[in-house]
Image 1 (tube, one colour):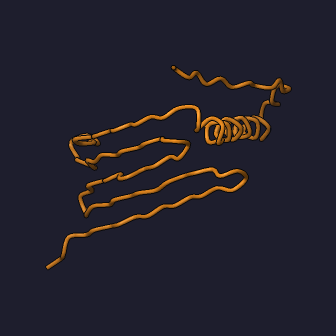
Image 2 (cartoon, rainbow, N blue to C red):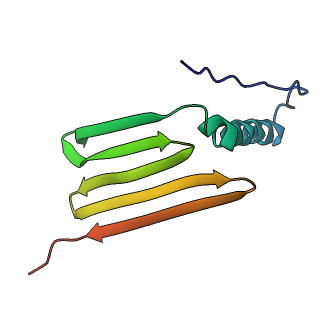
Image 3 (cartoon, rainbow, N blue to C red):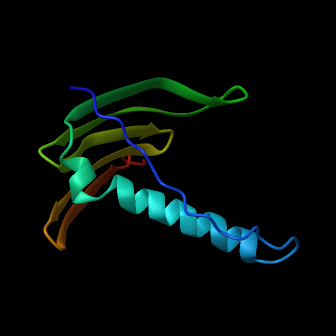
Length: 119
C-alpha cells in the first residue's frame, strides 16, 4: 500500500525584510521537516531501496568524480552501505546506519579512504 507523507506548516508572521528573521524562519521550518522525516513513526511506515550510479561528474572538461551509493530503509532502520566516490586523488567508501529506538537514536558511520601510493 503506497504511503503518502504530509507536512503541516504552522502559520507564522511574515519575516521582517532586512532582518535575520527570514533565515531563522526558513531554518526552523527545515529543521521541523527533517525531524518529521527522520521520526520513528515515519521511518516504520514503509521500506525502500535506492541505488544510484554516476559514471562521471564533470566541471567543464574536468572529471571530478564517479561513484555509486546503496541506500536502504527496512523496518525503520536507514542503511547507507556503501557510498563509493572515486576521486582523482583516491577513493572514499562510506557506510552508515540510523535507527530510532524509542527515545534513543542509534547512529553508526564509517569511512575508508584510499590514496594511491606515490613514487
